[in-house]
Structure formats: C-alpha cells, structure tokens
Length: 416
Image 1: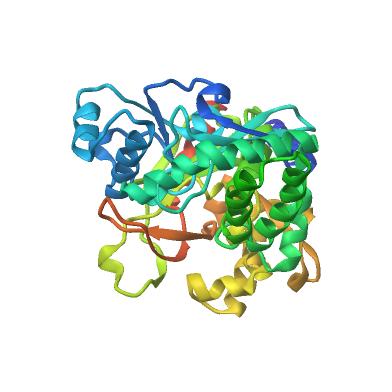
Image 2: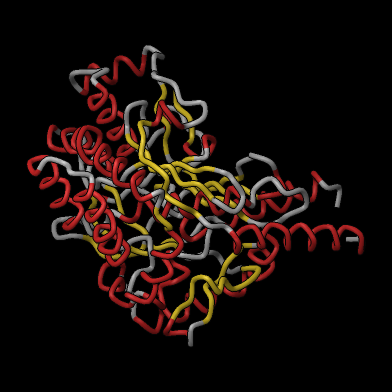
C-alpha cells in the first residue's frame, strides 16, 4: 500500500469518526412510516438485516411478517397473509436501505409508527421502529397485533404531540446519563426509559390531554423498561448515517442480522452489503426453552454496538450479566477489548467502571481482520418457530467472513 493511499484512508477515517463524535441526535417526532420514511410503499414491509426474500426468511421473521399484515388489516388470518405474500403482492426491503432500523425481525409497514430522529449537527434523519416485544419476535397472535395497534392509535399520537410541544428531545444527553445508571442501551435501556418517561409525561400533562386518554399512555411509559431501545437505535442510526458514504473510509456504519445472514456496511463502500452466516447466540434461556429452540442471531439492534454502545459498554451495565450470562469481569474485558478494533474513544459516552474512559467507538474493518477480534453484541433470542416471543438472551459475534469480504471489496474498489 502506497503512502498516498494510506494518507487518504487516514484522512477519510478522521472525517468519518469526527462526524460520529459530533453528531447530536434529537427526537423530533413519531409518525407513520408511510409519511416519513424514504421509499416506503403501502405494500412494502421493511425488515431487519441485509436483503432476504420470503422463501429464505427464518421462522420468527416469517411470523413477524404475518403479524404485520394482520396489523395492517391486509390479511385477516395467517393463512391469508401467506397467500398474499406468495402471490407477490408484498415487497420486502431492508430497513437500513431506508435510513431506518427495527428490533429483532424489524418488520416495518406503512402505518406502523417510527421514531423520527434528526442529527442536528449534520442534518440527516433516521427512523426507528417502535419496540413492542411481541410481533418483532414473530408472534402473530391477537394480543401481539392489538399491542401494535395501541402503539399506532394511542401511544404514538400522544408521544408525537408531547415531543413536538417540547421542541424535540435530546437523546444523546439521555444516553450519556443512562450509562452512569447501569444501562448499556441495548438489552438494558431501563434508566433511559425512565428518564424519557419523566420528561415526556410532564409534556403530556401540559397538553391538556383528557385524563382517560392520558392514563393508559402514562402507565405504559412508566412500566415499559425496554421502551428506550427504539430511541437508542434511532440515535445510533442517525449517528452512523452521518458518517456513511465517505470515500476511502474503513469505518463500519451498520451491523445487521436477518436471522439467516449477518451483514455489514462500510462508509467508503457505498451501500453494498458484506455478509456471512448469522451465528447462534451463547446465553441464558427462559424456563422451558433450550438451544434446540433458538433461531440464529437477528435484528438491526446491533446498530448500538456499531456506534459504541450495547456490548461495547457492558462494563457500564453489570446487571445485564444476569440476563445474557457471563461475569462482571468478562464485561470489563469485553469493553476494554473493543478498543483494539475501533478508531477512538467517545468522550460523550463514558464508563465509570473504566475510570470514565470514553466508549470504544468506530469499528475499523482493517483492525478486525488484522487482530482477529470480532465485535461483541449482547442480544435477545427468538424462537426458531413462528408464533413465539423472546426465549432468552446472550452474547454473539459476527462472522469474520463479512469483514474479510468487506476488506477485499475495499481493496478492489480503491485498487490497493
């Protein structure tokens, strides 16, 4: 590699990581996807991970697609949903290709509410599907579908009104504080959820909303500990999108899984996906479930690790070990180890247990391949069969093949 190429890469990476560090994501609204997401269509279902068609989808993603069609009223039964899909009436597309992210199966449809997160520094906007812990895991039952409708018809309307009244809500500030309160902002966003609820309920009261409308919304916000994950994902997506598309940059801007393949995208390699097989998750199962029930890794939520949160900040969240398995010492080790494959430390997000060091931020495909160290992701587990919900949680790593393919693609594009 010539010195000229090296200099271009280093300059590009400096530009990219500066965009990550200076991003300032603000929640500005929550709207139906069809109203705000670029390229969204009435017959489209967006999904987590790299591109995949119906025939090749895993069980929980198929279940989530069926649940989403029931939610939209496009189908009245799961059998009718399958028939509609097999007739070619539904178009599938990855969330990431629309500046969006979604948890687990990530299925996002026209009327589904999405958080609208704007990076005030760089002007780009990202969208995050709401987290509801049922349809996203593949459950298509009546309770799961009605839960999404409550989100659409009640929760999103109220939260949108309150957010607009507040003039937007600074999410970066909440995340920074949540790291001091035991969150890692992926599987444990409890503190973030509580802080957001405190802020938004005050605004809801000030809107003069009818008591009967306000009460169920307030109860949900207060009790939903995983609520802030959607906002954490939207924050991280807006941050990483700001750094995407910089020629010669080796920065990873997306880690995403569809339950079959794990895909990555790289700033300097346009919108190309580099994939490998999704791995099985090593963790703890809920009573009644074993490894035989589990589906491989799935979801866009690894955008949190892409931005230096989640598994990269396990040292800030010792309580999460009870959910994903391991020890507090291992959590410290992982957070330190991630510094070996990243470009910098983010002093906007610091970890008390590491003497307030900034989180390891900016995965570099060159460092991953050179060191053999893979990003660590903490994640929920879905059942391999459709119609189920979360069955456990654990730790997982991407396939090295994805990074090797990306590095090869980089060398080819820039004739190195």
